[in-house]
Length: 311
Image (cartoon, rainbow, N blue to C red; front, side):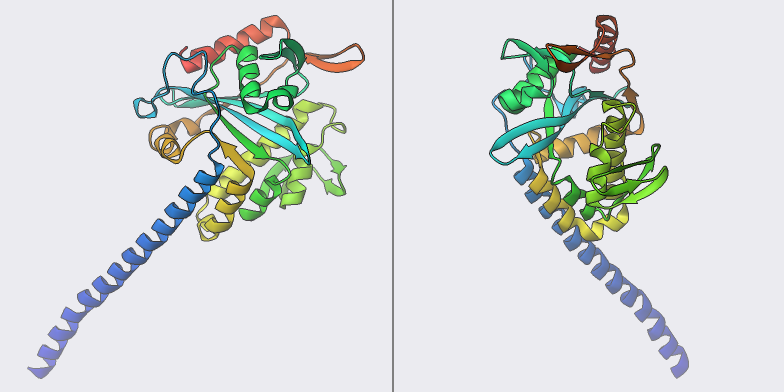
């Protein structure tokens, strides 16, 4: 009888013990989740840099993320210099359509000849940022692609290595043997540190594809950062990741808007189509090199992006 009572008491204790451990685990998880949320919110507040334009001149009203409306983002890698605003080292436009569950991405060659909107002259597109900052860069890209550019994300390329290091380095697929800035890169799968990733994404002149080869490597690194940053292992290093982002990224997106995008547009990231400029050519005008996109191809790209944005 005593043995039975003892056994029954023991059996009754186990659910309580398990319940206590589960409760502690849930509470600890909640505290950890809150810590991540708080750190992310703080980082986004640091990154948030509003601009003077409330919305694109090609929009009649603000984007409503909760209504799952298509939108666009200009991603700029900026080579910041001391006592100099710097130039946009790379310009990538993303259009996002949640109903089509797709993203279209186009890299604009930095030497592309176009009208610098707000300045009234034709020049290399990457000079727009140097002349008039983010606003002039966005307006000039709008003029070239004939679509609204709704948001921007600016990355300090020199500090990009800190972001790569924060996620533990990145793994990329390299299709060209080359050396640059004291680093050697062989063909195949490579694991890169921050300094290596920066050199890997900057090389241009040794690549027979020129700026297009560099754009390919930049996309490789950006996609690798996103993969590593989204991995479970990166959660344990979230403080360093958020600090690196806060110190090196600027955007006019708010924290609430980012949350809405994650909630309502997540499925779109499954299908990312890269639009390639195939028929452009380099030419010299008054001794200066420019990249010229034929009108027929530019019109085709404009139509594709307009249809994707439903404008």
